[in-house]
Image (tube, one colour):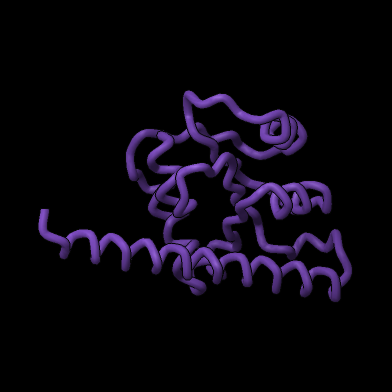
Length: 140
């Protein structure tokens, strides 16, 4: 994927809009530990987004092989935009926990963790927007 197409825009909206996350029934998970835990605990990983034309770590290759997710090769700058950092290796699009694989208590704890991660992503995105606005205001 090399453009901000409909899928990219949908994923971007999941970072910033709780209502859209709820309606879509999915959210984004980033980072080695959160993605590994999601895969290990049988969460529904719908898509795994990774930077195109970049070598992946053995961890990332293993996650791509172990999950049944659709692998989405994306332009590295777009991955960085979604992740709000340059070094993002994988971003997982995770389905909400309604499949019944975990107890209600476990599901609620996992959902709260996902919401906390999404909230953190929103904070990062807002920070990036502020930095961008400040950079635009700086004379060259």
